Image 1 (cartoon, rainbow, N blue to C red):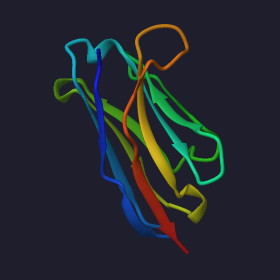
Image 2 (cartoon, rainbow, N blue to C red):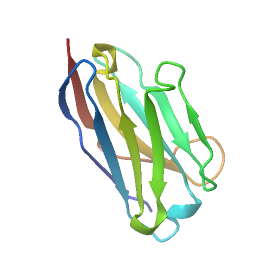
Image 3 (tube, rainbow, N blue to C red):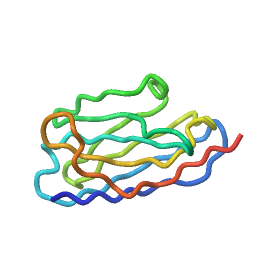
Image 4 (cartoon, one colour):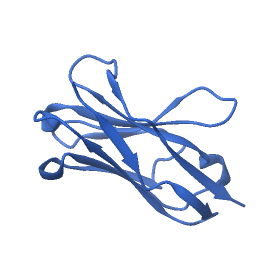
Amino acid sequence: QVQLVESGGGLVHTGGSLRLSCAASGRTFSTYTMGWFRQAPGKEREFVANINWSDSSNYAASVKGRFTISRDNAKNTVYLQMNSLKPEDTAVYYCAARSSGLVYKYWGQGTQVTVSS
């Protein structure tokens, strides 16, 4: 069982930056693929970025070049550095983990990010 707790959300102006953190429980964190997803009001949850055990990462086209995902296995934490934020980045951001396959089995409670224009 893995528990995920996000933090770092908040209100920021267009062009600003935020860093989200996701702290994970469990002794096998380093083996998990960790992902960030987001859900804006009235929209479906969408993929933002992920990072696997070897630090290989993937990004949604909408955030590539602006967001950076990283992990610190010693701290059981994954980060999402978000720069050049836009109003359309406003959403609840969720951290998720998967050990194998393509389905994310574990999810955090989410943290709100609001970008004002």
